[in-house]
Length: 310
Picture 1: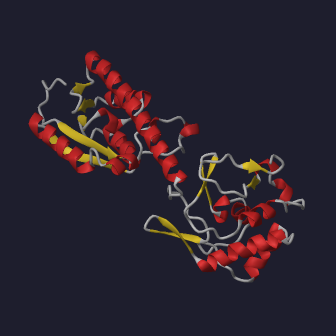
Picture 2: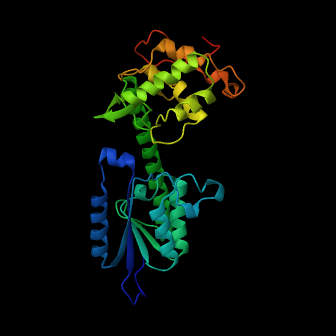
């Protein structure tokens, strides 16, 4: 970046980011990135205006201000959006990223961010790669490094997915919402007996032929609490009855694994409840989605059988 012609100190902004994946691997933490930015700005003799700090956000997401309206709700990067807004208002002259993958893990997103900043007469620096995109050579190397960052991001995602699959195969907790009737203690599922009793009663009523609406009304009249003290709804009952977790199975992706957690109901009770989708309201649930569990739990990943296909 040319520095001739400036009568005032060059104002610099820094942007640092860690995603959840990075936090798990603890490879290039937020503090280390901030230190790199501060040292670089001090070395160049610039004035550091602000360090924009974004945590727990994936680099695969573009900022909202650079996305088309139909994709604007698919996640966002509020801190990067604020950086772009401040650039438009002339708050700084150059933005310093610790590395290209901190700005974006997609080639297209990286180019969009870089070109948006340069249209606002803001120079862009990537410390680790030693790239200044104010000239053609810098833009060329930016595209190469952005491609490598995108490739690394995809490899990281694949490794995480495989790790989750192995953990699921061992019956481990892979994150997400904890099912009604359970809580997590030290990475293990523990039965909440009061909620488990409600789950067993729901299955008993269903096997007796009670309708989903009748079950909803009965639970409401008995003042049985949901996980978050909300009202019971038909969809809540369907989700409970269609969740193999209660019979001791763990579903990850499109496969079932025998879990290490304590089952609340038997496999036979689970399968029996699936057969009682009999009235008009219940037929809204597609029969092909009703899971039928194998009586033998086995040890590996199982493709779930479906009603009418066993």
